[in-house]
Image (cartoon, rainbow, N blue to C red):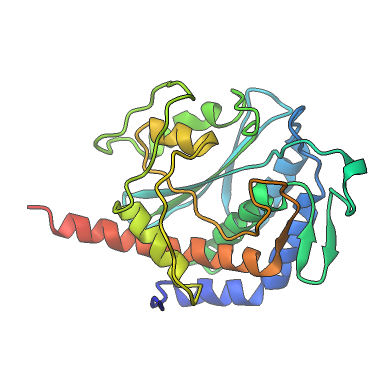
Length: 282
């Protein structure tokens, strides 16, 4: 099913012209050892922050543990709504002796091998590319864009998402129905498959693939579950390989490109559905 593009021309051109940079960025970030434990992400976070700042994106560093900092990057939009992308910088541990490839990055044709390639360094790099595309194209998104790159996700530690909740709370201030609260990780959660965010995510995915896109209602885990427990509509969206959330061995150039395109498309799809909802209000 083909979905018309909602991308500003400058953003679309940037993504097309900078695919090689997208791949090289992934190679560089995979090369940082952020395995958790111990989960030291300071060097990787500093590199991401520098990359964003050089592209004209405002970045805030939030750290309760200097070895596990978090970044919140913002691209101002034209409305009072915010779409927040969240990705974690840490990975699960690895034993290099168990790998036939370099766990800190090895390229083989269209495959990028390395721990975290699919969970979730590849997606983080795609998010960085989206932020840079809007900033460097000087294209105002229809909603404020916020990118939270957090640490300490793999072990559910307090140095990651819990320490940036206040920033998320501030950007969602005044949004009806959202409250921030601590809850048990044992409680399941899901996003209704007919919600505006799910509809927008499905449309964004359909815009970059030729086949059908299927929606699945699942409890999810990690930071996604935590955000949903806070009352914040949350969807996990990404293109990957059959190793995602399993052995996490590699990602592909195609997956990187599709993620960047889909995340960019999501901005317009989400804004369109928010605007439609507002216009139907009495």
